[in-house]
Amino acid sequence: MEKNVPKEHHIGHRAVHLAVLGYLAISRAFPMKTWLMIGSFFGRLFYNLDFPHRKISKRNLQFAFRNEKDQDEIRNIARKSFEQLGMTGNEWVLLRDMNRETLNEIIRVEGKEHLDAAKKKSRSVILLGAHFGNWEYAHAYYASRINALNFIVRSIDNPFLERERVLNNQRFGVRILYKENGLRQGLKRLKKGEDLVIFADRKQTFARDIPCRFFGRETSTMTLVPMLARKYRIPVVPMFIVRCDDLIHHRLLFFPELEIDYAKDKERSIKEAAQQQSEIIERVIRDHPDHWLWLHKRWKREYPSLYPEDMAKKARRAAMKKVP
Image (cartoon, rainbow, N blue to C red):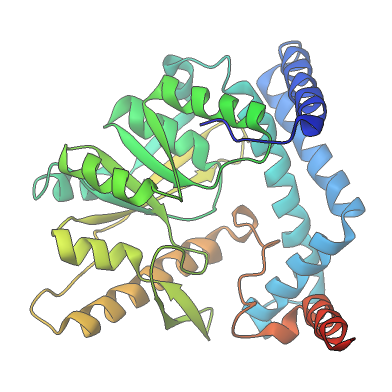
């Protein structure tokens, strides 16, 4: 889907797209390991230059881990998370040239017995995911080796880059759906035997949310996954991807199916499943904290004081509204 944008933006969007294509051409001159180290370098560079997001990341880390980690550890994780983003960005560029055989060599699967057990109950499953690791690789591998996959996303503002994302995913069997009407399409395709991946580490998007414990704090949690699982009796299998120490290879991890007690009251069973969901995501993040996107304002709703800049901005807007 190409977004409608004002004509004056086309030149800028096209320039960025051409720059990305040029960057792709440059990538062909480097071995994979060197290219990833270049991505890590740029990630570290952005960590040093992007003061606002660096500050948000460190605040979030301190808020989540409290006394578990000292300031040096917090800074190290924040820096490494930017480096991971840099490497993932360089890998995204490579997807345009990558074939299924190369992707298969990069990914190592663990815990597939959990997915197989769920597939015995239903021909389609919901995959529980998060903004963690190189999820583009995870989805591409899954769709090309296991089953057709649908992913609901927000469209990239640059329509040329959005087209690249769609084409890259389609080549591997991943269908990109958009938040405006993606859930309805995703459900239709679940009924046809295709699978659906949903990220549950942000605040609710499609329906109401409920408070659950996340890193020891009561936090608004997405209920979409357990609600769909309960309503349509579809198994939920957590799936995450972790970069190996050699940087090149990744481990695609499947975890035991989310437990949903259909015998219990609807509200209670959904709340318990949502808490399980939060605990699974937290456990994976704790094991690999540099793989998660710490730069988004995850606790903005419940703990606004964690982001004083936003509070100051709201105060300024309120003051302007009072001015006659």
